[in-house]
Length: 376
Ligand code: ATP
Image (tube, rainbow, N blue to C red; front, side, top):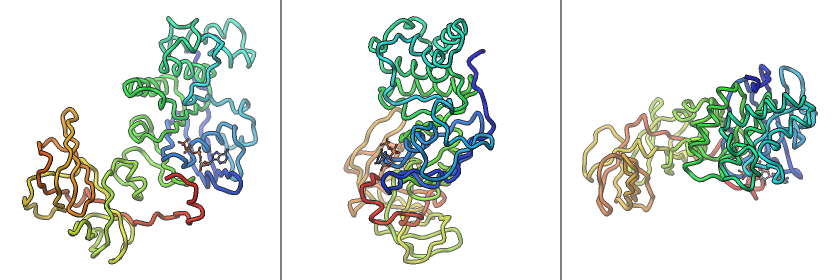
């Protein structure tokens, strides 16, 4: 196949930083990308994801740090010299050029021989299954089809790295799922190296080999989906990994790796990686699927248990998403196959190893001035 990525062995980001008028949008990003990897940058709006991507692409100069490709510094090179493929949320296609011409554009700019352009474009169109639409203009196609053109336009250049900035966020839910599979298929079959920006944890977990979770311009954790899902380093990462219940509490006592926390008027025991002491403010993380739900009063020895009232029950295929309210007003999210009714008093239990206890304060948290203007 002629569309196959050109390659490198490692791409190193060393303390990459970018500030705007003295405000840090990104600081000390350290990441080693191996050829063939699919890496997702994940975080809430304003955390610096697009800034990181644009620094890599060469669209934004760094204000600190270096980028090295196989040991050679590339952060001074203009975007066209880096030759990375870019796919944006808004497709960024030329509206007056046909699908074929949009895809051929980059090859023409590089003075690739005409016959080769023809062959590579045909192959790219085939890859993204747009054969019948080759001579249409972007405006005559759906959002999903336009994004396929944008992807074809990026991969036809055989880029060493493809950068994708929330490419699916303008598409409806069903199409997003289809395109997700498509992107992973192309990544694998073409041997691409991909850096993908998203705020959608499900998308990141399903696509990436490794995730980089950012908050306020700082890396919180880098790891495989499984590592982050099972061992989030702090409550911010836990929040992104589906720990929808993050309950405020105070440490009562610590015994080995187990920590007993006073939360919602009851004592809940969980595990903690950080050093905690009695009296510390903490957040207790629990995933909706890790709660067991039973009629109130059920005695569950050795389990963390909370009494609550069911408010909303939503049928979601095989399971129910239940929203319950603890007696102090705290909302609790539960996923269960058990049938419960709104208004019912229930006891929620979870086994200790499913309960994670984190310091309430995030390490490296910014000062109030730094937080000003930042969107969490
Ligand atoms: P989103 O998902 O909303 O696009 P993001 O995680 O991609 O968010 P960035 O766009 O990288 O976040 O922005 C990070 C921070 O840098 C934000 O606080 C933003 O306001 C700031 N910022 C980004 N671009 C500029 C700019 N050109 N001038 C000044 N501040 C900027």
